[in-house]
Length: 135
Image 1 (tube, one colour):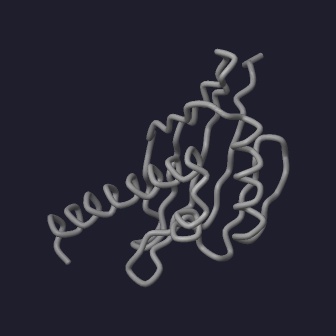
Image 2: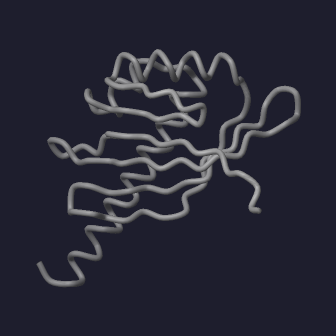
């Protein structure tokens, strides 16, 4: 592959990855189990800001739904960086804000590891971090 075609492929993949993460956000808001099952890898794992590990698609989805019920509100994901580790593996760094119903906001960092499986991008891992004050 020459450089222009590699760059075009990356742009196309970046758009697909952004759509994937937007679908994740939509699925969380709508509590859409079918969409989550479609966009998560079966061996997905998630480490949430409380320190809880969610391993495997069933445990991850149950935890996501539980969290969405506990923290209802408007979720916004802002993309910071997509870095391709390999042609079929990328690290996606985002800011993740949840505007809660009590007019407060939770501001998090979320990192997604996405993999291409059978031509489809899937979320293989999620790491949520709560920024602390700098000392």
